[in-house]
Image 1 (tube, rainbow over the protein chains, first blue to last red):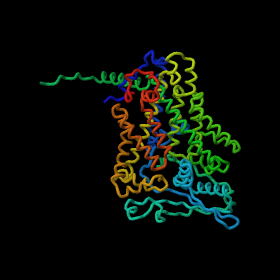
Image 2: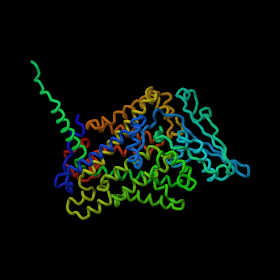
Image 3: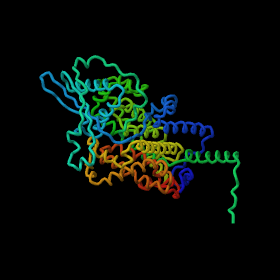
Image 4: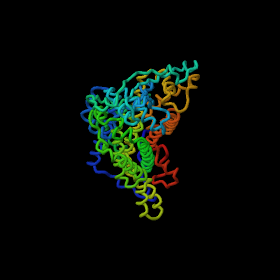
Length: 212
Length: 331
């Protein structure tokens, strides 16, 4: 079987439309383009492999200033190493009249699906951030500002994955036993007014989520 | 009877032959002209995806880009080891909505191929700016959007299926007129951009497959069950597969083998249609079962780079600018 590089590209016949642009590039232009192509393709190949200290070092020094502005910083670990439990954020706002407003994200009522996935990522990524506390606080501040109220409590919910055997036994994906709830904290409006201190810069491994 | 002895190569001859062959293949691979019609089609489809993706940001603009954004700009910057470029760092709160709608207008112009040289670069800047500012709400779709936007910006993506080309073609007469309104002449730029998309797709699939080898579930065949058992991803209930483990076993193994082998097999012209045909159920399945239609579709758009221009011309009923020798699987 022939691989692509062995097959020359066909050329345009004179009567089949506009003529091809002059195909000949000067040697200097070809050399310059070739050097850039090698640099670029090597960077694209190395970037997902930055778990290696050597490649991480090369990436940081040489490729980071080039690929970060292009948003080519990913490891392409879609559903790897394997699909895991989902993370959700539950919130409860106490209002001045004593009532409570409750919600969670992601919530399946969020439409369109694309917007649902944006909220899903917010919940999922909060697990992998360098400064979780500051991020939860930012979420709380946003939600309290959006919905109004005196104080807000957040919970982190892990939705565990049932086995096939558990489904065969009659369980449903949404059975309460598959939800593992952790209290995050409660903040008053006044507490959220004070500025939060960002964490020190994280490592480069902020692109390595397992979500597609 | 002894077989004829093949002449042995001296190290010097070997080196010279290696160099000359590599240079010839390199030259053929990168620096031959290519019909821009596939690049034009990829521009339209990527542009439509950019329009939709960013239209959806706009449905909840205040949450993501408002003055009280859920993604606190100070925290985002602190998490990013260096400030990732984005014009959103500099947009005043009262201008957010206007800038957002301006960005959507650029995407529409880019999709239609209006002033494509300019709008393709602007589309890249805009796509990257959203992705960098809103990084913690992004996923694979945004990575592929930015990747395609970059290659469409460096290549002549407005040379086919575009308003620009239609306008240029108006000044041509005769039988060439119809063709030149549809697509411009073959160019090395179209080839380089297409080749880069092809190589990048190979890198994506290789790492997607290789990283799965770290997970037991991809070895014991249960990984697709885990995906089906995730209520947050589910759009079609696939829990019936609990009674048919062979179904998710096969899907798991086929996914890994296909992803790992893509970067090799797709370059063989006889296997390419089969490899690309398998991409369709895989990515449509991601959309159908896991609700990620946008991600599944943009991956298929990337796979389009492997399709011959001849196919696009045949489907659209446009005369081919290339020799009829070119087949659907020969480029």
